[in-house]
Image (cartoon, rainbow, N blue to C red; front, side):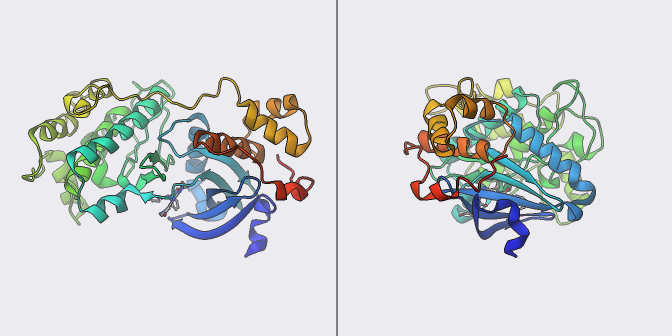
Length: 347
Ligand SMILES: Cn1cc(Br)cc1C(=O)Nc1[nH]nc2c1CN(C(=O)N[C@H](CN1CCCC1)c1ccccc1)C21CC1
């Protein structure tokens, strides 16, 4: 009911549900000040139970990660019963559905997407995180064929850095690395690279390399490391799949080798440009000025507030104005929203 979401009053207008998973649902919404679409992930704290720590892990990770191929977290609202995560809206839906609709992708289209996936994971690993739940359902398309990675609820940031061993067995079985499913300690980055191999196979073939309705049979297939090579696969594709789907993580290709692999470079003049294009050293003055004007505050007051990055309504407004600018739109606050300014308590 409308009352349930008092926390979003005067700031977002909610529309239809666009996704529902176990303990959460995602609704399309409009950020009223800019008119921009956002996706709001709504979780009930009671229903979450002992999954609540996973949400905190996801929120803390997403606050640290800013990259053109990661779905941007813009605001977090916590009430007695609910947690709301306001995230970037991706109007293209899941990569999973895109592959299903096309049956399978051509080698060049698979390469176009796989280079984006490499960029996202290379960036995440460089920040000390492993995603651990890579699959086409967790890669969304925006409105110009760009992929955005989501669902960081299973990610790990080992205390001792990326060469620190992990032990939790998690993620989706069909994408899980052999060392992960047999309970050994493993390195997050190496497990992500295996999942990238499964993902690449899914892009190129339209089905999974290891699949079985019986979980134990599935595990045996994964641990065998044997998978079918359909006739349409090129020898370059076969060689890259072989490098990624190595059962022994120490024989598996590393991220540094992957970004220079011949298959990844084929048809491109440069290696994967994995660094983030989001520049936050200095804040964007035009966006700050727009906010200062609207709330009748000084540029310095707004700039100091945004620098706190406390993921309140102002943080979301700043992100959205910045994204509008990146898309070549005027970063403007809608004039007819003037009447709301006195109601909006933005933190
Ligand atoms: C499906 N779809 C179709 C169109 Br058109 C747009 C979308 C769409 O979902 N767009 C979209 N933009 N931003 C988001 C989404 C979906 N979305 C999601 O976070 N979607 C995930 C999807 N997971 C994949 C495997 C299990 C659940 C989700 C997580 C919990 C509950 C429901 C959904 C965000 C918020 C980040």
